[in-house]
Length: 492
View 1 (spheres, rainbow, N blue to C red):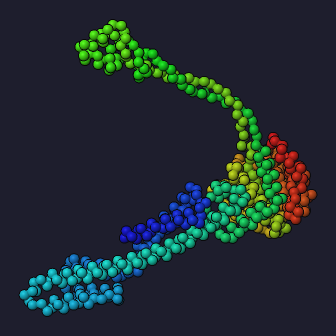
View 2 (view 1 turned 180 degrees about the vertical axis):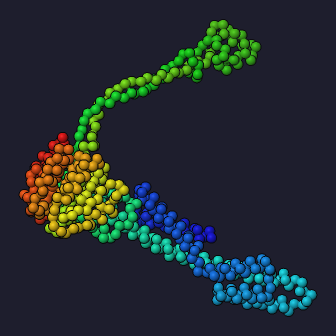
View 3 (view 1 turned 90 degrees about the horizontal axis):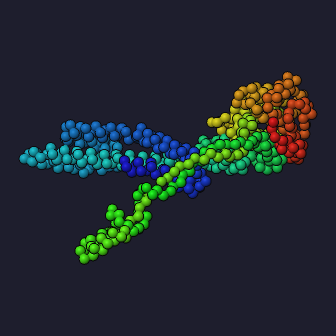
């Protein structure tokens, strides 16, 4: 059984070697914890399977029954023949001739020797049962080792698929500048290949389109410049200690001095007393205060407090409010515009999570779907949300109404709302415009990104604080100078 346990535990080393050779970049606490959990679950499941699924269970029961019968009644010719019959059913290749010959020899023995026959019959049955059990355990172990290998191969295949998925995710998010721990980490369960392909498609838009990169950088700068800096004077107490000599304390030897302090006379001076001829010299030195004595002193430590003032710059993170992103997935956005919109949403939502900002996503056409991207929500939730498309008409009013509703929530006060759409619509209701103005007075801000050539001419000028127009064909963003000017403005 020990070799069986060793075979199961060997999986841990095989996995470590696999990571070291093919996936050396996977080194983080979350990944190691998840991997350990997977290995432990595999070990428990495999051990449970080996115990509950024994293909030789019927033969084991016959063997155990035979062993108990032997302990209770000993051996006899019929019981031995029954054992051998069951043994052959278990292993058709076994040669039972040896035990059969032993039984024939016993029959030929004289009656005088019959007194020892029972002992010999017991020995024959014990021997054939030992062989039977040894053969059973060998076959069982071979089956178990084979099953362990089969299950381990399947487990390693699943792990490699998991590793490959994580590597693809790592490549995608590294390209976007999104580090593990923001939306995703290396403990993430396997996403489908379709999910990975969506992520790669959106990532390619972000990496290969300079216009989109520029827009995301501008939005990032806008968020960064929105931070408020102020000076504060901080009072603190600095505590320090000073150690000085203490002439009234004799804690340690610091040197030699002349005197007649008998307690501290050095041994060489005391040695003069051992010889009567020079003892007079000791007396003379004592009278003249010229005996060499140890000089001792101690130290004392004094603690002082000093009040100091320091000027520091404080960044008011609460000035960077939550972000609400409304993504248009109507029929007119189908194709490149929709993919660009979702790519930008992926980047901005990732940055929001990295900045520990509340992030609320609204997918809209004529109806809406929402996602509050608050931990433990992660990349799988975000991908599932971004995969959705309505492909109906365009009506931004329900999305704005939902965004305005969220701004009344305490967690989404002083929010930045961004609408990404082609704005193929017939204007906005006056009630929505009025609500936007009211929320702007509560320090909420409204931005719009128009994808395509339709522009913003059907949207009232007083709805959004700032507009961008992105043309997928040219990759340019209009009003760049206005954007740069807005970025440099501090938020009131």
